Length: 176
Image (cartoon, rainbow, N blue to C red; front, side):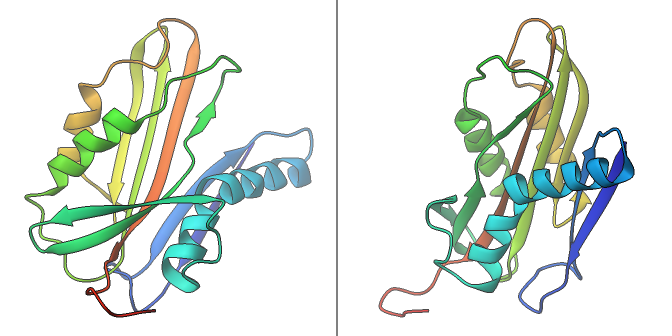
């Protein structure tokens, strides 16, 4: 098993840097590291590239939606939900994401790019891991929301992972 961390520094980020971490199992270190890299590619790379580095370069890999925040509008640039530890179908996390975005309203969000990551792991319907990070820091209000969400499956092992960037929306009439 290899745990691989990926760090991105950029002047547009709200924090000093954005850190993403993935585990990869394998028979060899190479396999384990490549498994973690593959998860990074599927779970975080596209929002980072499309939302932070080169807007519009991964339209088929990310979803964009407008998020109205009291401090100003953002675009949520979201990677597809990762489902781990099961091959069974799992409902999308849209309702959970809506609750998280509602919980984000009272937070002060400077006009910078903010990272939002959710990792939830369940065993037989019970929450085992509840990790919600805002700008690579633990976000207790988000963890309170996810603690109240139902398990995606009633039995067995399952985990879901969401990652997105909140990018300040351009004022109307301006172009990137």
